[in-house]
Image (cartoon, rainbow, N blue to C red; front, side, top):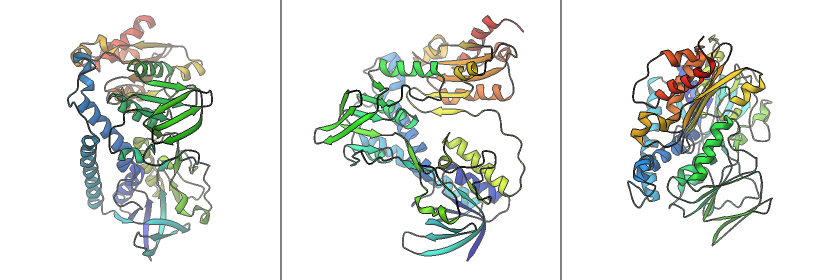
Length: 463
């Protein structure tokens, strides 16, 4: 029986980072993935496909230039599903190639098989061809990711009603779309197809979408969605979904009805743990198949078995999953790491983008901190004029007493890139005076940081 120092189940962001980190420490590593290609959910159905689709849509639709040329402007007049798929396949092929090369350089072994725990130090692997083998391990990392939640009362058929994995296989651009779920996935797909001028209705049972985002940012985002014609139905759960030849009809609990050609159900995800036989090692999961871990070491209830990535729940970001995998590998082999930074950024690749780091205004209030905010509209910057950016802004939140930056929140063009300036200032304990005293490239959207800093400084006064 083969024996390895680190067995990694899943080759997504958490799995690949743990595997490479373990190999760099001189350990033997085996990555097990039940798919047919490396990369996991992130590469094949999650992060990379949705972001590639977004970029393709924005390019072909001419979305970014409509501020100058009008809402009827398009780079490609008749956009077809094949136009979206071609770029997607090229991107995925490249991602898999890079990952394969990374494993090869670091002597990481991999096998395509389904893993099933036999004990706390042994798994049974079954390939698609039915070949069964046993592998022993000193440490293991569960990084199997998640799959779309599929309630029994939703008539999924891959013709009219889709989950977020199936949605990537659309054969043509729909004439109208209903999206159920106001989380990150639902919001991203709803706004991407809206940018293609598809009439979109977004349904969320709660009274708000993206409830972890600063409310002022979220309110502006909702305003932008409604301004371009999207319908948003909040505060009422779905009572019934009926699919037929004429399309999909959704009835809400409050009696409202929504009709569209197709429907995307994107309300929640479930851990891919069913085949792992976790009962054999005594690891329990919650109702959505998520594992509970130590938040500092990522150990499960079995000390030599770790878990990381989406399968352990929030924040379920590729970026945080990578770091979780690295931390788990280091802890497994006795590497002491410094304390992690105070904050990390969230990126929502909707149209427009949203990115946030640090405390929201609601969190600052709840903590009783005296604060002041600074805002700078992108449309008021020279770069914004050049780009035709008509909406969006950064919002900076400062402590009135220490003058430190507590939170940075951005909605608009380039938000997920610009957020890292705020991240650096927060983690380095920078103050409002940093933005006032430093020079930013001109003309840039990043210059809005300086304007927002001055906006707050004018009310806070000189130190």
